[in-house]
Image (cartoon, rainbow, N blue to C red; front, side, top):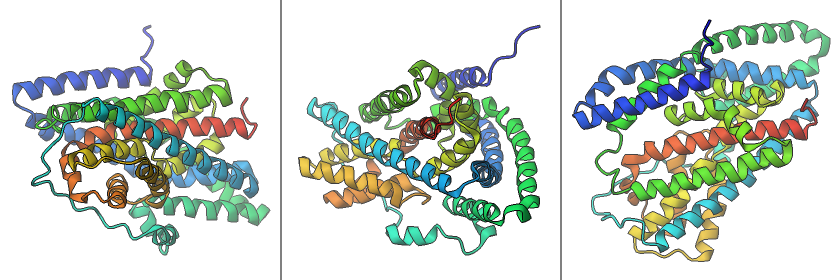
Length: 404
């Protein structure tokens, strides 16, 4: 009897087939075929993932808190997680700036004419307003809007309250455990459809996205992806090697399925079910992964940090502005703080980039030069963010002394 292909292998094959079909459709001049007949199946799959994201985050976080059985432990895990993400985001900014300046100095960045470039950034009301907004006024609205920061806060409150209630909350404990077991089964079924989603989305992206200006921005995209790869290897796999004793090959092999799915779906939240399976395979404890991964999918923006540093240097070149060391430090500080300040805000990547450009005096409208290929940037940065979430869950598990 032939052995069934593993999910990562199925996803990889789907990725390759999607690229091939996308190229055929692109060069054959019928890219609309992928938009009309393939992408809808990818949308259905992503809709199913979004459908289970809220119950997965809510129940997995509450179950994780109950498994820890100590709110002080929840606090220490939370602090270690946030510090890990802040440090790696700062490093990501430095990596992005280094590669961007190397490319610029070598004359590899194209100088595009900004005439006609338009972009209106979504308004960001400030860190304090975001802080207030993460505390929900209506629990059901938080669920229907899939506001992940609010869902996380709700999980913390309910998990802590069930612990505090002690024996009287036994029924609630049993309900959470039972409901989470059902959601896990549903999650396994939906994840099994991942190759279909990856194939259809990849074919659509290759056939349609950014085809008109892709060539002119190819080196800018290459610079960002070089930063993504270096960050993943030097920061994530090395941190797993140093703190956990896990080889880079084992780490990337274990995280592969989540990385590929994040790459095609461009959604850290939608990738959560796959990330959880990958983290478990790499040795992350369920209770810690259940806490770290949802939090990371919301506030970990290392990929976005690299992207905006590369984009900032490129757009500064288009505006004929040479960034000073002081301005580059401003980029690092602004990007690192903005990664937390814009957490959970729709279109956070563009909001962060707009904030950085405004801080440097570069017209925000210049974003219009690269917005057409933003999805191509987004695929890589989401993949990197998800990889960081998994690395963090593995490292925090080790730091908590729970690695078996």
